[in-house]
Amino acid sequence: MSVEDLDKYEADMELALYREYRDVVGIFKYVVETDRRFYLCNAVDVKVRSETGDAYFEVSLTDAWVWDIYRPARFAKNVKVLTFKDVNVEELQDDTDLTAKLAGPSDATGPDAPPPAGD
Image (cartoon, rainbow, N blue to C red; front, top):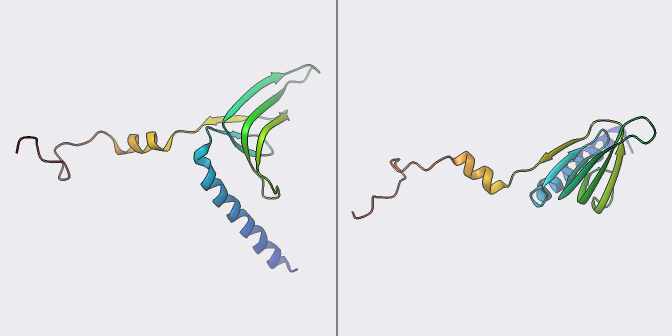
């Protein structure tokens, strides 16, 4: 296998992973990013621990999807992550709410407005 073949294989795997992400992102509530992985999940709990003197994060995820190109099964019921690095948690917006916000208030006087009642 040549270097070009390997590069093409990895590019194809990354594209397939992105497409899978795009297909499943709508069923999750949170995005969680650690120094090593990117997760989608429906429940997340982050606790700061310091039993040994150094502070670290214990992150518990429920109903998770893991962004990992080399992982054969990306869905997991429960995931626990321990890390000394930053943890970012973002709540995803519902697509219908976002679409409504982007559309803005309806303009009853625009060219596409329905005719006034009683005409």
